[in-house]
Length: 324
Ligand code: ADE
Ligand code: ZN
Image (cartoon, rainbow, N blue to C red):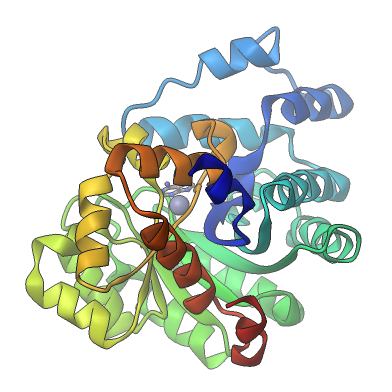
């Protein structure tokens, strides 16, 4: 089964590019950019990855970004992820990036997005992995800041497929960003939002996402299973759910294999993803393998989940058919 999973052509729809920053690259960039890291070796840095909920993870995730300064840093980060993904038979990926986490440190929007974009172009040409970019807003920053970044993105709309919402969900509901997302939709961008596992008011947030924001997909969304009404709503809108088992294990101490079984039984469009693979020490294959082992999923169920990723992707319909 492990080799079957490894060889399957796959897609990934929920991966934060900053969450793919491997300690070795982090050390190389820190040296180049004269940034002080508080650890002697990459191994020491990894052993400091001590998180057991979303806020404790986010603190380490944002601190790690300080080494990303020049366009080429964003290029290297993105190219390294795309190479790793391609080595795991991932043929298509939709990548999140968090511009506010960099502009707040004085890095320009152009530097960030140009570095990422050039790596996407080169990786498609050299490695045969296709990718599209999703700009995420940090929900613990203001709606005004999000809107400012949407304005900054306007000259680069051809490089973006959609917008998302991530970071700390507590007290930061989807409704805070209605106007920003309405504007993004008008600009022709797809919409998705994180509804992380077991955050405050997750069910209310999922409902707002669907009924008010009218998202095209939901990131995580596992708690929808607590409400039959929400499950039906998700199904009737044919919304994909981008679930991240190993990330869930860190944040809520469960791979959520039972919940993923329930989603499959209900014919919900569940997909499997890595979220922040350098921090959670698991890329897409490791997520799929750990999940399969814990939940004894059949090969057919694994194929369904991988096919779902292509189905609910934001690839043009005529291109999707080439993968399915
Ligand atoms: N940013 C990066 N990873 C995240 C996650 N799992 N949840 C919310 N925001 C994030
Ligand atoms: Zn995420």
